[in-house]
Image (cartoon, rainbow, N blue to C red; front, side, top):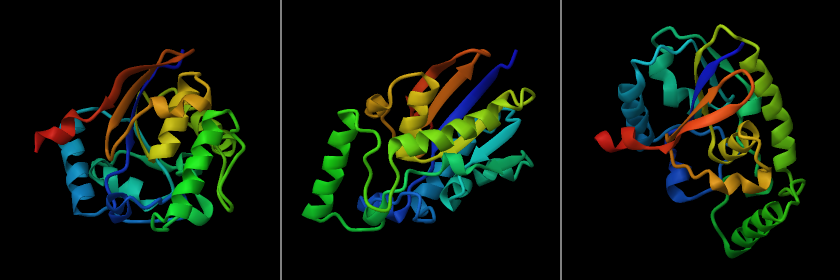
Length: 206
């Protein structure tokens, strides 16, 4: 029977995070000083965990967030399924009243169950779900990997947590997050269970 513990974290802060600008899948940004400090704090708190494998998205901010673990020679793999949801024309744009309205309208659509709704040039939650299911398949196909570190993105993380806990995607906002916050999830061969919810204690050790 496959048994695993997944340590799922969001990447550290970037300048666009700090400015409240939507990044999405199309913005391949770097961590800022605060993000690098968060990454160092997370490493100090979890460096004793015997990770067998690391999975990250194809965007460099995830690798930068857990690079210290990769430096321990822990094998890692990039999965496109872990990339952030694409926000289309909103990516990298400053928050204008028009952009804000488009964003809020999209959120309302999703909460109402219209999970195919998306921004022009972007992705819907249902499209992200399909690639996340592929990523989960890859992660579960390695029974020898018991302790797994996953670094990904805010909105995508909310959708993944719904998938793992078999909740409808309309409940994505039940999973709060900030930069480099941790969700620890166990898998007993049949179902996933959250054992550590939105944990940011490691960030308070500074």
